[in-house]
Length: 411
Image (cartoon, rainbow, N blue to C red):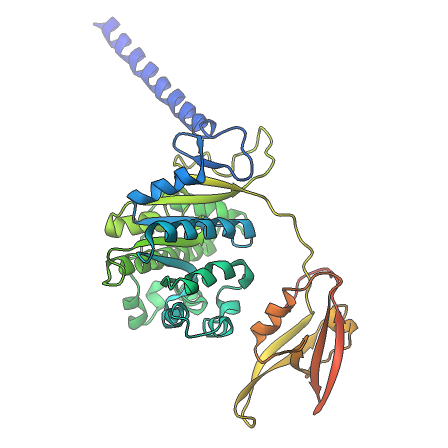
């Protein structure tokens, strides 16, 4: 009898050791399944580790309603992948598609509808959606996408909430919102274990863990459930009921399928694919692979498209703080007024002054802050810009030469 009990206990111990070893093997093999050698332009089917062609990737679109392309916001090659997928979508499915974009806020949907119909200019689009405040990344990164949607009258669906609303949730929590604001929110899920673990890893790279994480995590969940709600609502609407939808969104919102894809699937159970753009980098043997977190036992995406890690470019700035001021006397026209000038900056060296009104840059009329930002972002080290300035009722022209400066500031 004793021997049988000992044998049983030994068996339990062996099984337990086997389970522990198996867990370690699974954790290790998950990244080993990914090709050891990859190059820029490769497309990898993550579940099998097989490299495939773009045509083979595109064939997988036929069986799904939604395709997510996770972008790296500041990488132009990431957006080139989106354009390639968009054109393929249009070739295959024609008018039966729509594009959802994280970059736009739901309150600006009417502006996007006018853009699709060709009723407004690019300048109107940027101004009416408050692009530079609400999104902030260089519009030239997205220009090809939006030009293609307008030229082919493809609906663009705004997915996001405003920065102001995000800030209010961060400061007050959902319980601190007004009744109307709370009722505008969909059901918010904050219970996904691995989603939370992923965002804890992200947050640790920016700040110490504290109450601030809970606020950060709540905003992320609200953000993603709002976008999921926007996607689901469109696909169930009369306009989108039978359409395929292409989603352009930050890679962090789709990696490991949690974030937006899981939240959309929970709402409508529609089949989907995720494409993650991955910047190729040199990894040491001891480094954790960026796509395979050791404590998150999930596949990062259905497909990974390998892109180039861009070289850091020298960015220039004008070196001023500017503000839009409305001239009530002159037909309520907006003016861009310089509030302050950084001393050792291109603006400082050119002797621009606080109180100067910027009338034009390189012959282009200026009336909005975003127009100054847009113009400066096209400049490189060594470039010049001719500014027309109104100073104490006198128009003068000042030539500014751009150079790299240390530190951070505003255009």
